[in-house]
Image (tube, rainbow, N blue to C red; front, side):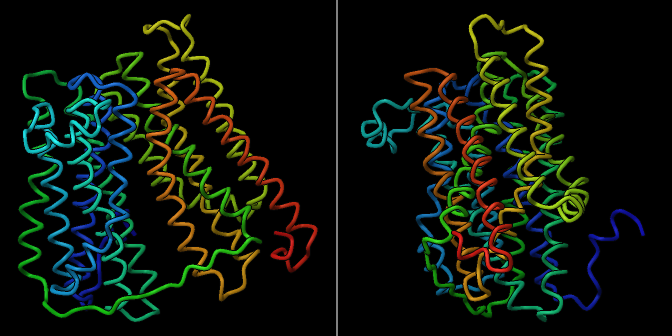
Length: 425
């Protein structure tokens, strides 16, 4: 069986499922390219600082608060049609990003409200919000569409195929940024964001017109927060937080201090994506053979080590031409392999929760990650403003240490409690 045979759907597969898979490729292609280029565009092209960058990342995640807008759209159009509209919105946000370097009088009131933030960062935040609103609810609408359009026996297979399309699109987005980043010419970012955003607008509109008008059913899950799962909540939030600091602020640090080019930053994300794609099954096998206990402890111990190296790299005696920048390149690329073991957090629920509690906790898992994505970027930017990168990476080291301690505590409770670890908290 060839590598790409997994991407093929059966002939009898519903047309809207195939369209959803193709749109998933495009959505991830555009979002990945935007993410990989944001550090260089912000620091080099727009001359923004770390606080501005934190503001952009926080704005990018505020879309989760405005889910009612998508619910309103679903009152009038089907999920399959909404997917095309959301992809087109994402493409629009990407293309508008190229214009972030111009003050817009329409946003004048926001410039006055966020007086301490650079106007260009506010522009980026607005366009990032548009992109995030599109991609965040694209995934939710897509998964809901699949669940209600396929037999339950096929749902997992269909979702795994669509996930493969998403990973391929992510890698393609990073590849475009990597290739474009090694060229230097005027209007580079205009061309780059045009390449990333225009296909999303055109194909998104075309797909929306082809979609059926029928509406899909909605799925509601009740969120129940229980004190006995507090270790799970802490581990989920802190893991999401340290991932944000390492991946985004680590990459921004490379650009800000070591003046790393767009091509190298794109290469980091491309290697990160490639390692995740090719090693994800091996990581699952490793967790099964060695146990989540050992793999999670190693994951957080390695993260702690990486943050200590980042702390050393941020010291004044480390010059911008130091070999440390290449060490940093390797760390940020390899960090993706540690995140493969984050799925073990979800497996805690199978140990600690009854079947009735698992769905609610999975929803809480998602919400905690979203909260971390809103709070951590702007908090890290404020830490940098007063204490420089030392504080940001020290914060990441502390979070890694907390996760390591909680991992020990969770598994100690599980081992002590036999078949009912939930009672141990």
